[in-house]
Image (cartoon, rainbow, N blue to C red):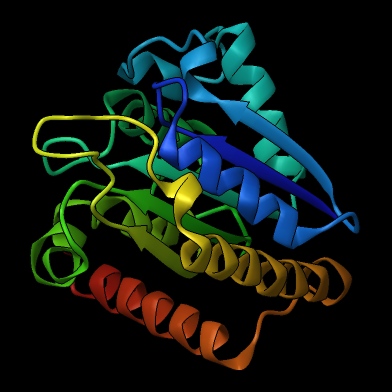
Length: 224
């Protein structure tokens, strides 16, 4: 099976990059891993022309498209900056509509249930995630579902600062968080392996996909 890790953090060292690597350790050696740091890519800002199949999408984007399409699972690790993900990740999501949505109406996802996992790092404590931060980045899992993917799980790592206004690596000293991320990586690998072999997800995820597709069908019937 093939798993793609997309890291949106730009700092070196990066908390989100560190957790992505620990997640990969949990996945283990049974998967072919491809890790991409978005900061290393040159991807133009979204324009409507990129929905035209005749438009040159750019070398880095074509490479990323191939990796997404050929992967059996995708992991996205991102910091939360100012109540949102970094601009280059949002731009990538916008650009992915060129191949993750069917070309006629751009309303049907093409990822066929591909499993995703999301890792976030932020300065706020966990209660702020459940009370506010989750909503500020809600466009990411919703977009993935719209593209036909399925978000299997989410990890939020809070208080990723050394102090007020002091940024830097902190998660490398958190044994419990490292163990948790590794365990989630192992579980994700099991889900992806089943998906790669059978084309099926666990029942809970299949039920959520059914709910989302039912909502889309109802929306189309109502002409919304």
